[in-house]
Length: 409
Image 1 (tube, one colour):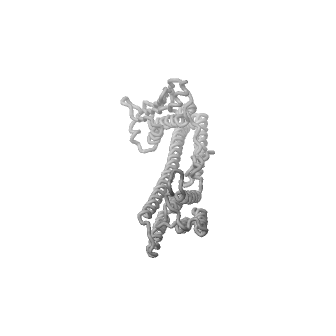
Image 2: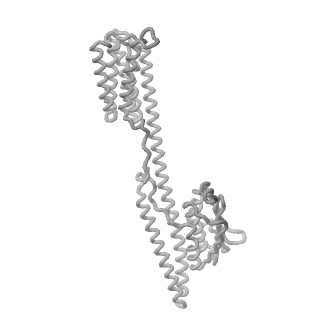
Image 3: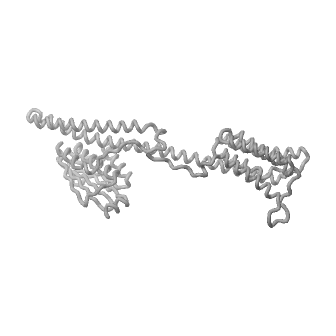
């Protein structure tokens, strides 16, 4: 059972904690710039009259409490949380004796604005931006109406940081949506490809089995009165092939039902059991086809070795479908299967000396399925009539580098 990787530790920190850290960092900066630090002749900013009085400190404490409540509510009710954080920034500014809401007091609001833009709908994010800019504008308007000095230029910088936080959050939101869309598309595509694979397996299995059954039934019909034992043997072979085919179809249909709709396939691996057939079953295939009346001569070159499951299965299915086409269309008594185990690729050839007329142009899924199998393995495939008569199918399946090295060592 596969487990999804755990998110980085920083991503597991709740957004409210980040907003809280932004608030306390701003508070620390506010007090630091109002004291004389080492190497300075005087503080960077002169503290206001109210800052160190009891009422000024009480104002800062109330503002911090508002910001803390806003941090706790950010994930559940983001706009209300932002309202509390903006209120805290405004309240904390009154005891500083400045003409604008400083960036240090607005830092927590910028962080909250980023998380709202990154995780909420575009409408909610835009509302949050209007709230932030409205707070800055309202603070300046209040001071102007009261006849006090205002720091318009400094407030424009603070407003710019709010817009930047909103834009960065919106970019993160769009990136996440795009990533989720790609993940959904990839899961749906994987499910479609898996069902196409099952369809190819069903076609290859059914087509081969029915071809053999048709030959055996025809042979039984011809000798049923003259050679009843041979007819009985042929019909027994038909029964065996039919039962095997039904069993295979049942397994594949169960697999299709378990695969579920597209949305259930997201984020999990395919549950479809893959067939166990491979080139090790080639002798059984040759015996069954020969018993049906078409002799299959197998020619192996190179040193046979274990193959990757996908290559092993595809090679067997290509040979099975090609032999099935010989049985159904070639009107010949034999065909030749050549397999070459190379160091870099597995080469397959199935050829016959039958009529070989028009098979490549016949409507159907056999050749299409073989081409798809080879294409999925980045191999080469050809299927064409021979000049001297007959038909030939060739496939070259490249071996993975690791498999080639491992087998060659």
